[in-house]
View: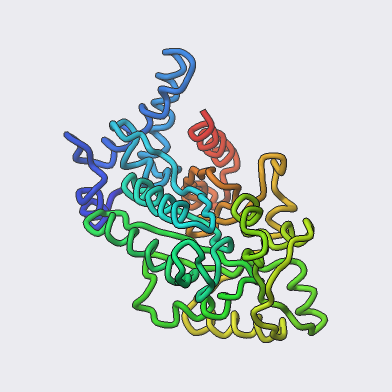
Length: 333
């Protein structure tokens, strides 16, 4: 049963031409997804099955799928992981990619540890870098402007690694809750940092000494400080603090505003199912999904309250298993 509020929400942005009910959306989406089946018989079978579980709200795919399936857009993925290198072209290319993703109702996750810290020299312009926070302002503004009049607002998740010289400012950047309203942030914590925390050791905030290895830096620096140092390339230490003090600051500001979160980057990569394709660097805006750059996630929800038997009041495992099978097929075909 669709409530009055839900109907009003659907009318604001979910209905396509000629649609007036939740059932209309369910049929459009189910039919669109079933077109990936290999023959007409399977298309008909799964169009009905997909439409049925959506209409009954046993399973509901994500907003981009509900809005775009069966339209000229056909952008069905929820969120995308992108990357950014430390040059102005890459930074604004990332901004352009974000704009296109937001335009099609998707979200973006990225790790900005490759960007040089605030105040660092920029040789090409004889100037100084605005640092990670400055470019975060650009990204957040893009999410706001592109989706200002849309039902689904732009959403970004930004990670910054524990070694980065901007990390102290990053931790505090959302203390003013009027800023970065389209953005969630997390500190990417390494195993090395956690060991330093456990043993109450000092922790260096450092960055590649790019002035001495400019060509190598431009070609090889990707935000992975361990990889850089393992190759024997030098770093510049900007500040040394206690690991526990850095961790205390993260917890203090998370308590104040809910931000930053933390992600355990090394653990994410230990569980990376396809390490040969690259390292996991970031998550999507709500952290359901972690991945390598230029991958996307397809999200959906199973309504567990609908999996309870009305007669017995216990879990209907048969219905749950069938719904899970259909939901997986819905996304993988």
